[in-house]
Length: 166
Image 1 (cartoon, rainbow, N blue to C red):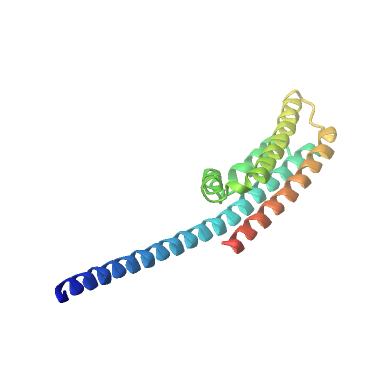
Image 2: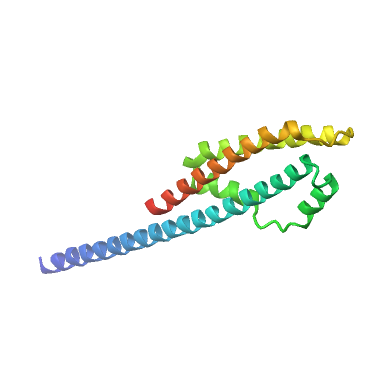
């Protein structure tokens, strides 16, 4: 009976030890994943800021063209000279992998970006036809820029809240 008790006791001790190691490893992995998500969300916050600043900065230069303070070639030169300090595909990837709950706000931003692009294209066609006066485009463009900036701030707040929840 003593040999059986020893074997059973040894087996139980072994199983408890393995179970404890497994639980500790699982907890470590969950903490590691939590930290990685936090780091990616912090990166996303920064990338969104860079992306929106770039888009809004280009928009201000386009407004200068619409007001005939710059010509279109000067505007394009400013875009070319500007250092791009974000990777839009990385923004999309981080959102898809770590923050899909932000899709609604992100999609609204993309919609507004599309509206800004539509106005820019219409103005460009008018400009290319020799009519440089962009007065009719300024008000709607500025209104959409303001909405865009509002949604950027909403998205950044949502990202911050996810970081705090994480």
